[in-house]
Each structure stands twice: as structure tokens, then as C-alpha cells.
Length: 395
Image 1 (cartoon, rainbow, N blue to C red):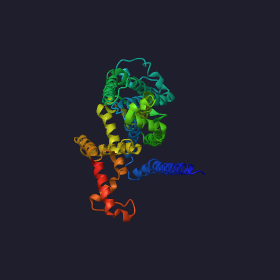
Image 2: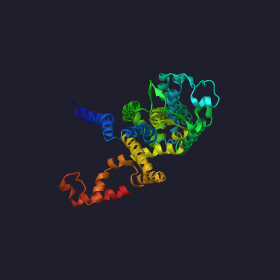
Image 3: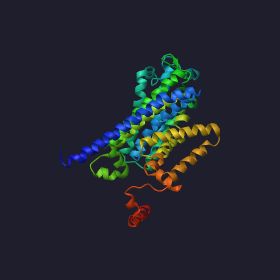
Image 4: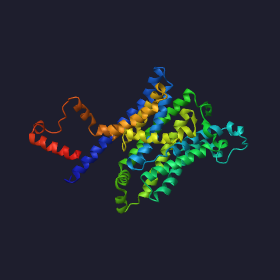
């Protein structure tokens, strides 16, 4: 073995060990979510809360997509409600027309023939493909039109929000096509002969949500850990330098935006079917798309675990606070966001990674941890050099 090969093999060995620990952690968390949590909730006679947990986990899937496009690529999308709604409406449309009959609301508004774009949704395989491909295609087309013209920054955010409003009024407008603001209710429909709102079907949707969340995390982890991920970070930090290096960022941004849209579509389908209804107001509201960004900011931008954590914690806080304080929970949510932005600018995970625990310990008088030999820590010259270094860092 040459001297140059030894460090390389050591690095690979550390990476394999880190990957092994991560896989074990994912497996343990997956078992806890898929097996332990349902058992605990049913044992406590609050099994209905499992549906809430399923919604939170489905929202974590879209948070991963937001982190991919914003945290790693630096593109702040405020219109992901579009792709979320497309996934939700796709599954709801299949539930309405799977038996070949016209939905009730269409007959009420004088429609006597199923619209042409509803007909493919009679097929379940087509619906599964549409949940992923339709949001991905819309995101890809929108991203291509935007990125090829080198639109970025705040203009990209405004444009995605404008597109969101276009889709919002499209679904809200023709009441005979999508039932307007009433949306499509799914809880009374059936899937493979079972009522969607029944406990058994909801349990299946919860388990599917857990599996798809793990799959989405592994996909994002794979994308961000290799050369593709490093290129996304380079685009985020200095796109012009990437362009001067010979890469065309447009294609990479379109791909990551399309993947993010597909994740949003999957999340929308799972969330809508566990909520029992999909409407323009609960999927394509501007505030809801902004809330998605808050999840990632709270958990930690550019950290996939932080995106999941932020989505679950904020959604849980919103549910609990809205139950206790239905008129004021939005103020609490705004306050939480301000607190995180001012005190934890890197989010919860960023705070932990930046030594937040040690800083918190020092506030209560605990000594700082020793990073070198104790004799060096007590050396006045070393302490002086450290103080100079910390002063330089804070300037």
C-alpha cells in the first residue's frame, strides 16, 4: 500500500461507517413510525391522531423538495402549492370517477358527459403515474421557461407566486369542472371496495406515507451527497462561477425543480386523502406555500433532516395551538418564525451542528468543553490567541 493510498482508504472507511450508522438510524426511525407509533396511539385510545401524524409526515415529503430547491440550490419557490394541489386533485379525481359515473357536483351543474381530461383518471395505474409525472412536468416546463431566461432571486420567488395564483383561480373558477371552492371530498368515496375514511384504509395510507417519506429522504440524500449535490451548492453560492467553469446551470436547476415538484405531488396526494378533501384554499393558498418555506427555515436550511423535523414540529404546533387558541394560532406561528430567524438563523439542526448545546451550557455556568490537552487549554498564550481569533470571527 502506498503512502498516498492510505489516507484515501481511511476516508472511504469513515464514509462507509457513517453511511452504515445513518442506515441503521433510518431503519430504527422507520420501525418506530411504522410499528411503535400506531401501537402507542391505539393503546392510549387516541388512534384518530394517527391520521394527523400521517398528514405531518406527508408534509415532510414536500419539505424535502423545498429544501432541495431552496436549501441546496438557493432558489426560493413560493409556489409549490401548485404541484401539491396537482397531486391531491389527481388522486381525488380518480376516486370520483373510478366507477365510470359522473361526479355528483357535475350533474348538479348540468354536465352530462365526463370532460375529456377526467376520463384517464378512471384508471388507477394512470392516476399513480399522474400524481408523480404531472407535477414534475409542470415544474419542469415552468422551470425551463424561467431558468433559460436566467431569472433568479426575488424575481423567481415573485414569478412562482404569480403562477400559484393562476392555478388557484383556474381550479376555483370553473365550478362545473372542479367544484370551485368546495373542492373534491374523498372521505365518503371507496378505494378497492373500502371506504377511504375507514380506519383500515387510513392505516394503510399512513404506512404508505412512512415508506414514501423514507424513500424521498434516501433519494434526496443520494442526490445531495454526490457530484450533483456539490454542483447544486455551487450554483447556490456562486452561479456565475459555475457558468464560467463550463457548466450550464439551467439544466441542473430544471431537473432539481422538477424532482421537487414530483415530491410535492406525492405529498399532496397523501395529504389530501388523509384530510378527506382537496380544495384550492387548503392546497394553493399563498400563505400555505409560504408556510412550507417556514418549515425548512425552522428545521435548518440545507439539512434534509432539518426539513423533516421543521415540517413535523411546525405542523404539530399549529394543530395543538389551533385547538387551544383557534383565533390566535397564526400569531404564534409568526412568532415562532421570528424567534427562529433571530435566535437560530441556521435552524434547529444548524444550531446543533454549530455547537449550540455547548453555548447553552455556558449560559448556565458550565465550563466549555476541552478540545485539546488540558495543559494547552490553561496556557495563557493559547487563551489569548483564541480570544483574538474569536474577536476576528465576530467582526
